[in-house]
Length: 97
Image (tube, rainbow, N blue to C red):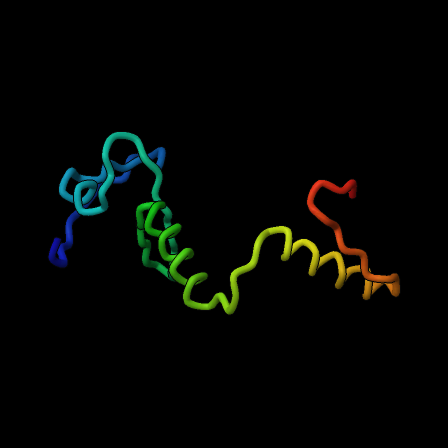
């Protein structure tokens, strides 16, 4: 959809209806959720799936190495133990924490 400006009525309770052309451009079908971003006096609506896709793309762009959740948790535990002056403890999968 090319850049387009339109007037939309906002009811006294804050509800508004997105025109069909806008919903189609955003890929919204039936009920759905959007991300609403307020920047000063401007409001931007984005389909929630686009935010997820952008976050995944940013992660892939900046991730230096493949890591699992367990790798991340083990690193945080080791940092916490070092901060507390304890010996670093590594948790293996299936062990009791």
